Picture (cartoon, rainbow, N blue to C red):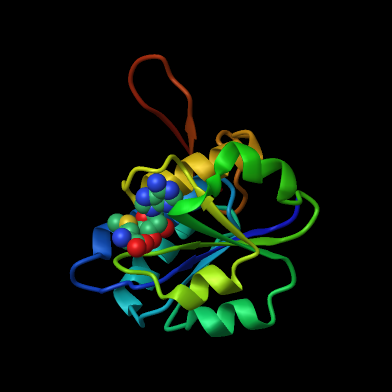
Length: 172
Ligand code: SAM
């Protein structure tokens, strides 16, 4: 499987700080390689880098990147998640696993040009819900959940699954 990138559009630093943080963290947990966010937000960048520093793995964040620029030279397929898109169960077999993908999620209204630029406009059900939920469900279905318990190199700590209580190993 090739790399998965996320493009978050319509980010408003004050109003969306928790939602965009969770878009990034959820995509990281599910195996994405990194996120682009359209509005500059150094605090968001710092928070995500701090998680990567502590828990390891290879995940990057860059803010202040227009979706037009992120998608322009992108080598791979662009997948836009929208309640108006084609059914995810029908889209998935058509989305290649051996090419990079960039998954676009919105905040408020998404410009019509995004629908035109996308190689696939994909819905996770046809009810309005959340970019965090839509992204997590899409990534889980696309990857089969195989990244959820993978070992992440280079962090300060590793969490060991535990039926009751918390087991955290400090990494040297
Ligand atoms: N009314 C907005 C629009 O026209 O796109 C929807 C905004 S919604 C709060 C924020 C984002 O969540 C959307 O841009 C989309 O990426 C995602 N989203 C929400 N519901 C979805 C669904 N049923 N399927 C796929 N993505 C969804």
